[in-house]
Length: 253
Ligand code: ADP
Ligand code: MG
Image: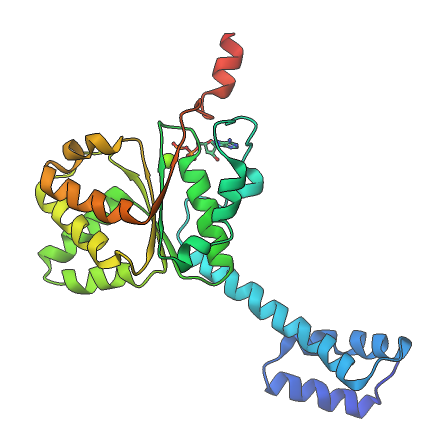
C-alpha cells in the first residue's frame, strides 16, 4: 500500500538518513501504512515512528553498558533456581533488583562457600543496573589488587582509585580467596574508604567477617575496611549446597 507520495517518501527517507535516524527510515512505510489503515493522527503516527528509534537507542545503550560492565557471564535472576537454595530469601533478592540500595549508597555482601551462587546473584544485580544505564563494573578482587598495585608502582594510584570510584556500582568478586599482603590491604582500604557513603559496592566472599584479620594480614586495616563496608550494608549469607556439585551428588546417591 502506498500512503505517502513517492517523492515525499524519498525526501523523508533522505532527511532521516541525513539526521541519522535509521530506525525511523527503516520503519517509515510500515508506520505510514499503519497510520492510514487505523486513521491515526499525525502525532500518534510520529510517536509510533520515533518510538522505533528511541527504543533502539535505549537497547544499544544498555548493551554497551553491559559490555562495559565486564561481567563473567550474562546470568540473570530468571536463571537462578531458588528451589535449589531454599535458604535464600527470594523476595529479598528481588528487592535488591529494584536497585534501591544504590540510591541509599548501601553495600551488599554475599557470604558463603564455593558454588552456592554468590557470583551469579551479584552479576544478576549488576546486569539489572547496567540495563538501566547505571555505570557498573565487575572485577575479581585479585585482579583489582593487581591493577592498584601496578598503578602504585607507576605513581598513578590516585587516578586509578578515582577510576574505580566513578562507578555507581562496583562488584568485587572473591574477596579472600587469596591472602592479601599489608601493602595491598592498604590500597584496598583506600578504595573502600573513597567509595564509603558515596557509591555502592557488592562484595562476594567465602570468609566470615571474624576471619578478615587473616585475609588482610593486619587487624587494624581489616577492621577499618569491615567498618566501612558493613556500616550501610545488607549481608546475604548463603549456607546451602554447591550448585557445581549437584549432579555429582545425585549420581553418587
Ligand atoms: P559462587 O560464586 O558462590 O562460588 P557461582 O555463582 O559461581 O557460585 O555458581 C556456580 C555455578 O552454578 C554458576 O554457573 C552459577 O550460575 C550456577 N548456580 C549456582 N547456584 C545456582 C542456582 N541456585 N540456580 C541456578 N544456577 C546456579
Ligand atoms: Mg564466585
